[in-house]
Length: 337
Image 1 (cartoon, rainbow, N blue to C red):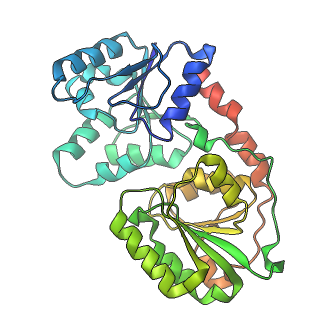
Image 2: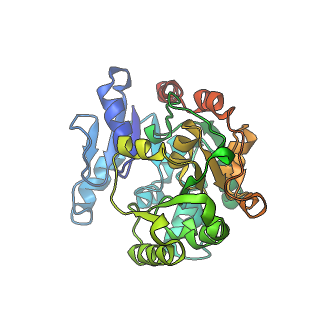
């Protein structure tokens, strides 16, 4: 038995539905601390809500599943408190690194930070498609946990059928994508600074702001975007389904991200799969991971020197995406888990 401990979200729910519906994964079970839109199945186990009111039942349910499990796959830092009090399960745990946990680990104090460091510092393996996240986790936790490569989720499975690279220097004007969410780590203002003098070469600046919890920050970015760029600035505040979003990304020429940590990888990979030029912050785990494997992504500081309408070669990205981010790679990992 393999027990996935998940917080139901746009990443884990499609994965759970696929593995539950595919007969090859009957030994995979999904433990959710809250209700979800995952298809009902005996492979789906919900804890009782509210968690505190049903504390003893929930502890017993988790203990029973973890005791029977050959392997526990912890997606992010879900119900970490349980594993803190039952450390004899550590040798079974494989931690799927989201990235946000690394920021919590870096916190200088706090009970939650200490709890996460205690648990995640003793897991048996790291699961990620970004080796540098595992390397950073080992450094922060003073551990030597092994790394397992996985595409992780369907959001990282890339279809290259629509890959088409264009010489954007020959276009009269281009469409630019800025950031991916309302999280302040996008650092939108710094990107606005990079492209403000390039506005004559830009037709539209699209800014996805439908995802995230920071409404005050979102309002600030919308106000600043309109102030600087007028009607060329298009904030995207309504959530699109995956097919709508991919179709939208087809009109983008250049995407610029300036996250200060690993983020927006689903967006980044999808854009690469469409043959788009992607700029990122050099030194982040995502930038280092992609460039070390040969992907053509670019330091966003180059925009200051060459401008946003400077053409970049991205043709080799197609083969690399098929090697690292195909559906078969994802399925093979979970079959061999």
